[in-house]
Image (cartoon, rainbow, N blue to C red; front, side):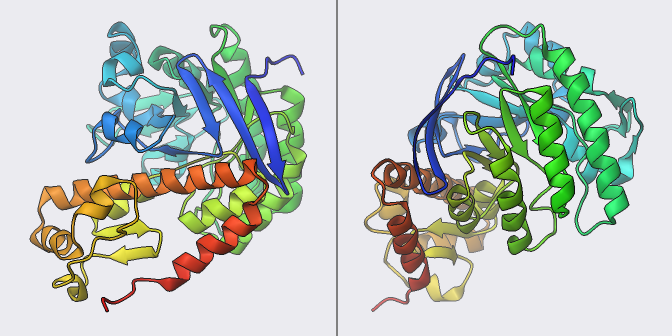
Length: 377
C-alpha cells in the first residue's frame, strides 16, 4: 500500500480497538464520535461547548456547503476551520448520502450525480472529481470518496450495481486526491448493502486501491440493527488492522457500544442534536422523553453524578417546562446534554479498552440503561 498511515493502534481488548489518528488540525482519540455540523454549525450549540464536551473532531456536509455558502467562498475565507471557528479536525462526507436521501431530485450516471438544489432548484453536477475538489477547497482533514448509497431493503441487482459504481468512483476519487497536501486523508467507503459477498468484494477492491482509512457505508438506512451488526462482522475483519474504520451515520448509544465491540473506530450521527430538539435526552439511565407529563413535578436532575454541569444542575421539571413551552433553550440544553453523554460514553469505552475491561464496561453500561427512567422515590 503506497498511502501514508496517520493512525496508531494503541491497544485492543477483544475486537475493540484503542487508537489515535493524527490530522493537520490535531489528534483524534479513537473510538471517536463525531458530532454533525452539516452546514458548518452545530444546531443549538456553540463550538466551545462541543469541544468542552470532549469531541476531538466534527463532521461537515459537502453537498450542503457547496450549495451555500459555496466551497470557493469558504476557501477564499481561509477554509472551514477559520470560517466556522472550530479549530480542531474536520471530516467532510462526499455528498453521496444525498444521492439516496434526495432521490427525487437527482439522476445518477457513470460520470456523476446531477441534483436539483433543494434551495433554489438550480441544476448541480457532483462527480467524484468535483466532490474531492470541493472537499479540498473546504480544507477538511479527512475527505470521503464519492459513492452511491442504497436504502435497504433493496434488490440484490441494485445493491451490486451501486457497489460496483462506488468502486469505480473510489478509483477516480483517489486520483483526484493525489495532489492533496501532506497529512490530509481520503477514506474509501465499503458498500454492498445487506449482502455479505458484495461487502467482501467492495472491501477487497478498496484495499487494493489503497486509502488512508476505510468507512462502512450504506447501513442504518432502514435495516434492523441485527443486520447492521452482521454486516460489520462481515466487513471489519477484511479491512487493514493498521487503518481507521469508520461506521457512517450511526447511531444510538447501543449501536456505538456494539460496533466498537466489533472493531469500529469512528462514528457520526445527527441523533444527539436532532433528538434533543424533540425533547429526548440520552443519559446514563437510557433515553428519557422530557415531553412526558410525569416529569412536570420532578425536582431531580437527569443524572446528579454527571460531570457535565447542564446534566446535573437543571431539574427534569424545568427541562420538561422548556420542552412543552417550545422554548429554544430546551432544545439547546438537551442537545448539549446529549452530545456530552455521547462523548462520555466514548471516553468510557476508550478507558475500558485501555485497561482491558471492555466487556465489564459493556455489562455495567447495559445494566445502567436497564434501570430506565426511574420514577422519583
